[in-house]
Image (cartoon, rainbow, N blue to C red; front, side, top):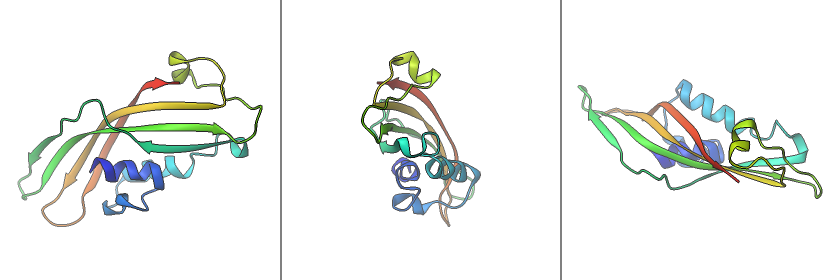
Length: 137
């Protein structure tokens, strides 16, 4: 499930992320993908890449209907890269905690947890995805 969920940030759900049923969590992740380049316009581009989480433990509960409710680790990095030489990006207030200097590329690492419902029948559903910044360089 984590690979499929991270695909929402990488491709908007065009690959592994197609497995999910509609949910507000999925809609929000797709919005982040769709609007990823809006902040800087043509001056910079943003891309997300799945990374390996520091903690890989997944927890699961069997549901009454025979499905599974699972909490799984999530992890990706966000790369913001200027598109013209001579430009620099000012890190956000959270990114600046780790590195406050302006630079042509800002790489920010996010780790978190996802809550997924895998029903006995039907498509899995992303119920929640929560991240925190763990590094920025």
